[in-house]
Image (cartoon, rainbow, N blue to C red; front, side, top):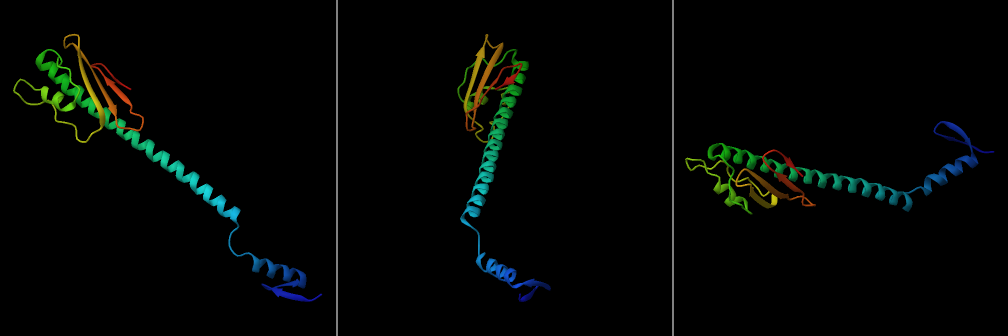
Length: 154
């Protein structure tokens, strides 16, 4: 039996031949290994995209809800000064904000920046004693946000 030295270790000829053959034939990855990596990367990318889109939706809903709270504050100030809420029903934000004027003719609020909601409706109820605001957030499912003087809900 002929012996070789491989990395400082004495080995037999047959083992040395197997090591050199295996070393020469392992060039790159098999198709199965590559497909496994591609599938894993695709799964991770899919999870990241879904997470990103859901965080965008939550941000859009939060922005629309913040605008609704600003409307509620303006209506509360209007109620204090005028003894009732605005009695004019509106289906758009701009005329609604323009109607909310204090006794000196100043607006209670400015228009919200950006377009955080798709639809806006203000319905005066019970001769100005209460109201219902309805907005549709600009998220993927069109979340409806409702508000009256006592609460805000989805």
